[in-house]
Length: 461
Image 1 (cartoon, rainbow, N blue to C red):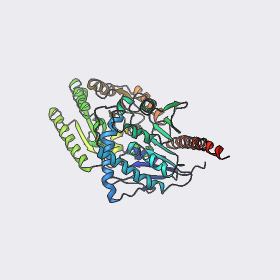
Image 2: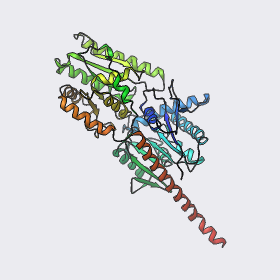
Image 3: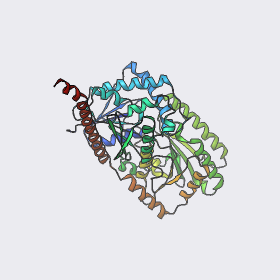
Image 4: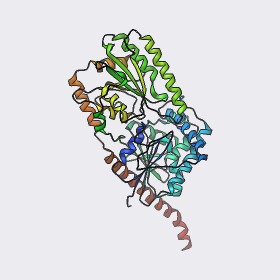
């Protein structure tokens, strides 16, 4: 099979956005002439090579309800929260309608040899509808989040239908091996699929390959190294402890702030020159939801600063960052400690950008959640449980008192992880895997069809 274009489909889009998946897709297409399609929301900023999928007015409601199904149901479900997700049949039906219409739009763009790469769980039903129109199109999907086992997934009222949708893919990619195990458990237990060699699953005539290789983001290291302005109005003697927040349920903001308070109480001398910075990345379909969350966080930080008014300046600062070319590099560059306590969504891009922005002669320290996608595998970072308030407080102290030689060693260890897979190599690996599995599925289906008609032919002879 002659390989044509790589067609990527992601949410939002735009190299100037804070959406890390969009940055990853941008990296995949940075040096290739594939086709990047993205669904825009609330003023995206696509690069000149990006083609946005047009939305009709009658599709807008379905799009918003589809996003609610993703945020309120799929995301917490995939993170093993059996009772934390909310299923709404109305949202789910909109999710299916939107994806069916999307499949029809994609089919019109298809050329022989194209490869389709979907990014994240927004698009799970697309493969089912698209294969009905273009059965020869190799289709793969990557999940940025975790994936739950059968005991949790089976609590979803439409569990079987969603798993059936996934059977129409040729390749499903996760960020870690444990998610492959969870996905395999759901497929075998709920759907009756059987496991094959080389991380493959079979159900009927369809075989899907499951892979685990990390997501990567194209980083402009030169840009990150140039900006050294002091953010938040800091003094040169201040030490910045920075976190990146995503307006959603998995930020663990409350626990982190409690850890900050405990650190201040137990380390009053060390904490005198500390600035706790919270960088807000807009990630929500609704601008009103963003504004409401920011108001709530501003109130939280005001309460914290009131408790610590004995300090000469407010230790807790917050900024909503939109100018990625100026403000974000300064924050990353100045951060002595960077904390990401998320459950794993969009972590890799933020961590990579922090590492890339560091002064190699005086690097900062990274603290990550053991529940995150890269958490336990990220050698060089301090790994904590996001709900362990005491542990997070102690990790901050450890990072601030860490000798320069150890910080440099950890910086080098992180570099081995972040440099391990370039966007070009990732694209080549994905293309080979999805095309190879698609070819094998077509051959298996042809042989199955021949076996089905052979008795009839013999009868006529």
